[in-house]
Image 1 (tube, rainbow, N blue to C red):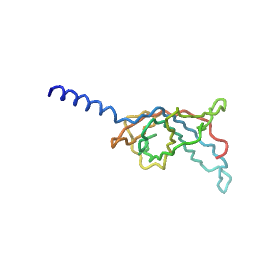
Image 2 (cartoon, rainbow, N blue to C red; image 1 turned 120 degrees about the vertical axis):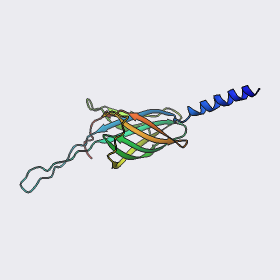
Image 3 (spheres, rainbow, N blue to C red; image 1 turned 60 degrees about the vertical axis):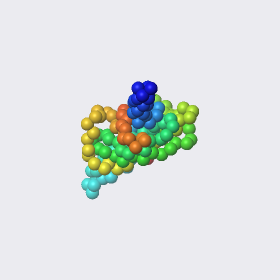
Image 4 (cartoon, one colour; image 1 turned 90 degrees about the vertical axis):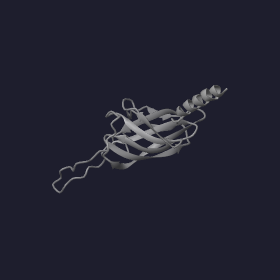
Length: 161
């Protein structure tokens, strides 16, 4: 009888290890490079250098308890991220670069959709587990840190910023 309880308790403890990951059903990651708009000139009429920065749009579909998102790594930089719940569906993520077709996202019934917004870079830390085309997301779920990779798709830049 003691062996039975020992085996059951071991099995239950192993099953609890598998419950650290949140139920993330989909990660939709996109990026675009904004159009420069009006370019300033110096006193001689020469155009000033314009720094065009990449904008990332990440949507995470979650079933059940939503994790707390902490940070993201991309291009050798660390970003703080905040999660914004999406309530009106479909959410227009952008348009395709080749034919301008809208990219709409609707979560499955019973799931929630969150947009993760990047803040200003906090450091130039390099996370060694990612490739140059990947974004690594860090979150906390049930007091445990977890990581999720995403590969963003290029979308058309909005015409008006």
